[in-house]
Image 1 (cartoon, rainbow, N blue to C red):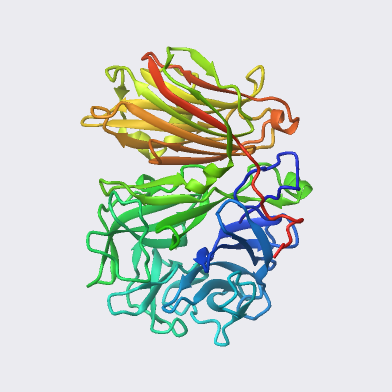
Image 2: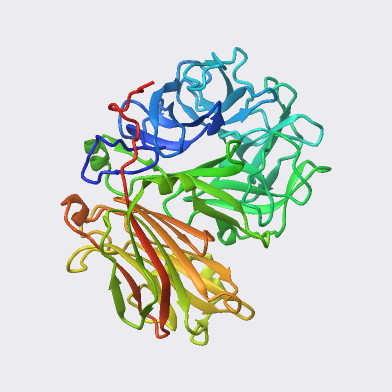
Length: 551
């Protein structure tokens, strides 16, 4: 689905150091890869306007050597064949044996039949991969599955090696009674055969879009290459975009059954873990062979009105690239901004040994509050005041964030950050925590509350939220990192256990006024801040020269 921003294009809500951005309507990240010293991001893209228009969707292409500064190249796929004439939708890149990249993508025909098409680079020796050729036998996979909805068959994954040494991919699909990641195999990536069972299926009512399937090692932040043998002890993550969120399951890839088996069967998908608990969708990951890590990107759509999108000439962004790995307990994925983003830091300020009592607000000065990276450690002085945890809150953490907002006093919390605040606090966004005690563990609620982020009536201003477990008997510190990029706010709580992306449009930002930022505590228990660090973030070079390639 999409992506945006350009440094020379300053709209009402300019995006100044966004790590990746494109003109016009940008959506799902697609063929992500590292090839011959160059990072590539292909993405859903409308080259004609800032809105989603049926039949216009192509694949944009940007390249980088450092994941921070990007150059936009010409689109690599446009709808010009019967198998994609109504749009070139989401897909993935795979590096084959011998190092050649290929792309599989969903094409839409005139009758809204969705098929899978193959693409090869014209010149594999070109590190920028500027030109591609559609395979002569496209479509290579057609929706000929009993009970399959032909208009809900899309988004092929990156390929991996199956138990028989053949390539595998999964394709998101909606059938009459269930949704699935359908499984296909091939010897040469040209001719594909459907395996007689799906990789995984569930009776969800919403279609699984943009599936992603990758291996992870518990407690090891190194990535695993799915095109080679996976080591013993590895688990697998199956991610799908469902409804408004990217959800995932942790389990094993059963080689005998050639199927994904979750560690825990959870029928109610509301309890599935999420990649991000905010404005984040259609994510895609890839193995970075340069640094041996897995990186994930997501699409964050605009939350303002369509007329503003048209006026500024672009809509949608990609989040900052994140390293993703499996926690040491093997239960959930952790995420953290790639280290390269720190190259934009400047004007560092530090505070140590702060103490926040109930009602305290400590103003953070000395950095550009519109363009900042903030890291805080909150230390709990006591855990006795933790309020009881209600498991039903897990079904709708957003609702609980509304009911237990930053102005509602608690036992331990709320405490956290107030950002993009106007002088009179009429506008402000709050990222905060609350601590609860369940029968055998502590549950931390993290919220990104946008309900007072703007005095303008048009933006969508929800309260996002998610829970994570923490062993407070061993560790009393809770970390928060928040990256503020004008209208984009990305927060990472508990070392990346919960991530929340938010889009905010305060009038103070449009007026280029001064915004305030505070660390605060509104709970009964005192909270210490042993370390607070913040930086102004410099502008990255993103799609320079009016969006055209300098190569």
